[in-house]
Amino acid sequence: MADTNSKKMSGVDTGRKGLMITPDLCIACRACQSACKQWNKLPGDKTTNRGVYENPPNLTANLYNQIHFIEKPQDVGIQWLFVRRACMHCGEAGCMDICPAPGAISRTREGAVVFDKEKCIGCKLCAAGCPFDVPKFDENDKISKCTLCSDRISNGLSTACAKGCPTGAIKYGRRDELTGMAKTAGFNVYGEKDLQGLGVMFALKGDPTAYELPAKPAYDSSIALWDSLIRPLSVIGLGAVAAGALLHYLTVGPKDVEPDDTSGKGGDQ
Amino acid sequence: MAQMIQKTTCFERFVHMLLALSGIALLLTGLGFLYKNELGWLNTIFGGVHIAKGIHDWGGLVFIAALVLSLGTWFTECLKWSKEDSKWIGMLGGYLSKDKETPPQGKINAGQKLVGLLVIAFGALIGISGLIMWLSAGSTIWFLLHNISSMIFAIIIPLHIYMATAANPGTFRIMTRGDVPLYWAKKKHAKWIEETGAK
Image 1 (cartoon, rainbow over the protein chains, first blue to last red):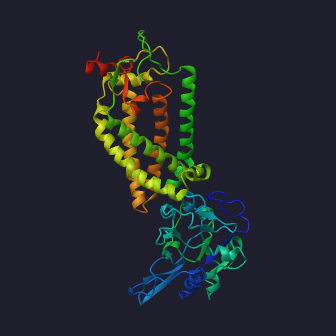
Image 2 (image 1 turned 90 degrees about the horizontal axis):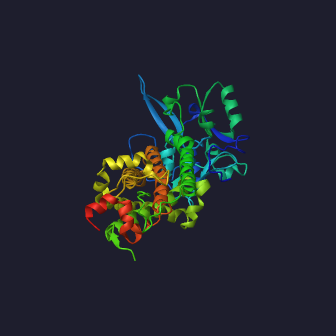
């Protein structure tokens, strides 16, 4: 593993693993939240009653997987939409590209975006580079997020959340097979192509924005501009200065000032 | 022994040294972060990424302090732009030929003034964006601004170092000892010598 450039998907495209989330099947039992905490040995967070069923309110350093409750007022009562929030394991991962610490965020052979707390330097740039606002930080400012249960899937098991899900709202498998199944069942697949394919896709009937998902998730434009333009330009610029200085030294040469130099030539530094 | 004239005060040399050393440490650790796959070894030399981050953060504060001191020390001098300075820039300091006569320069020549102004401008951008990234998760706009400014720095500073060492023998002494031979100063900073009235 440990390829830290997200744009190199070599060895990952074939048989890339992922999740298919079907919000319509979710009953908000939050078995996935519990299964995730159990497998990853994460302690509970103390929360307060906010007058809603959703709990905790968002991802935390100890919560890699959260069911978000969307309440839509109807003529009578409300309509509930349940959306799983967690790392999307983007094919083109902004977090991985902006990360300054070698090996702190990397991609596994199954396509999961994983982290190494020992290598993380706590700069939090990954959170700025994430289109889904996923990375959270522990008490030592180290990154904390879903790993797609890379320690399970590399051993042929499914993710803890998918195993815990009683309705099939979270399905684990090969990405290509998951998208095929969802399309056959008549769903639109969210994230099939975006960001070189999300590792976590959604099988939707309606508009993604109704589920509070970005309509067109995009790779961060600042990271893209840096990577594609400024980075090569700076190398060219530095090379030009080095070559120019060397060429100047060898052709025109340095401007010496001799004590008896009265010719008036030479000039200023 | 040639007659010497003092060009920089002890304080000026201290400020320049502080700015230069902190700037170099920041540039090297920063390059190690930005080009983690190609230049990550730079930070291994500094003792690993964790120590390198400490150097980059706290060294940044030293750099900002040095930049503020520089502002007070050289900014007004850098802003004194004369016709000779424009002419000097127009002929690229006469560096393209050995026989070109350059117009008489003040205590700081036009090239140094330009470097000074660029360092203050881009140094301020680097400092502000760096502080924002350090103190808050922030937005990638600051990341981009920090990087662009730093890359401009990484191009200006090697040029400045070449000009003050190999290209102009005798100049580096101004940064370390502060005094230069009078005949050297008469040639390089004629206007300044005229103003001081040194013979």
